[in-house]
Length: 445
Ligand code: FCB
Image (cartoon, rainbow, N blue to C red; front, side):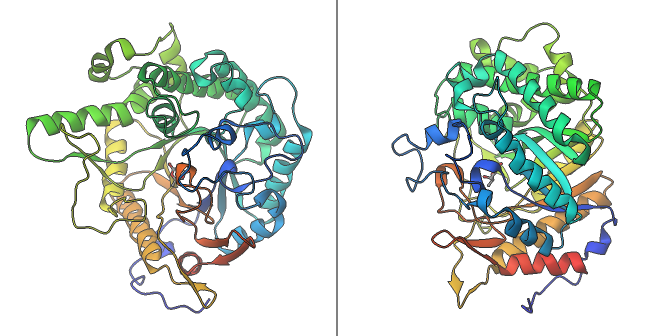
């Protein structure tokens, strides 16, 4: 606890309002484990992990951080950081094994204890309904490509609200629809591992429609928590001054950002992207765009890095000389300020929340300590970038560090560590890293 931290004198938590939301974030599949107990159904990620070579280290989410069995200890850990909020997700197949039909009381019981435990510790509840672990039974019927999944999702949303709504500060319908749609259905590198662009665009549309349907019905049911959605966003720059690269950067921004932001805030899809998609554009029913554009209490922003686009190679890596994380992502805090300002300028956002921000590094445990100075500096500089956006008049009221602890990093397995707290997977021992202690001191100041 006495580790020295440097360079923080000009960044103080008191520069933020006292009601600013400070948290850490996780998601169900990445930490819970206990995949085959208490009636939990299979999710698309359980099945995807079994595909040969799908996960870098051949691992899966069967045990993960064993959070399901270590709930109280983990709640104490969260509280010990001095945050006032926790962002987590419900595993839909844990509470409704088939994604339709009967509810699983044992599953709801777990989330009931989690939420009660947060409230008892004075922590706000920021709940995500869909952080990618769709019930496999729904995938067997087409998953998000099948429009009826939207109705099943709304029933699930209403049930969660009925049980826990009054304890929640915010509800997020979907985490990063672009990732689910494109990485999951076009590039096939995430569950369910499909490779078809038309399917991916239909999935993206259904995720947005189901979001709008859920917000509309939650509000009619009297839900009072903040309602929103979380997008993965980053500034996208052309790799060079060439006209081709400039156009490609605009198109990529259209596919990744505007495809979601425009319908959510302006009730239309961007015309340049529609034109580019041609026959791959989704089937949109009458009224869908109005459904999608329900008022948002907040927009959640997950920010990790900036991106470059090149007309030549779409995944061209631009080397700026800046530090890169273990994911190969450039450390670029200014991008967060820029992004928040752009969102505020281009869209009528009421409130922005940084719902994820963090970095993977090759941490080493030495004498029982992890001296992750680079993660500490990453967090500090991105919090500073958030503060700059606020100073420029952008209404940002929350910052969540990704992640509370090391966990299952999707296709990268357990090799990439994003935690502020180190997890020894052999013993499940949790050890706060230097970054956790820095965050704690920063919040105390
Ligand atoms: C985001 C995901 C989150 C985590 C981070 C590193 O895209 O929402 O679950 O994996 O990346």
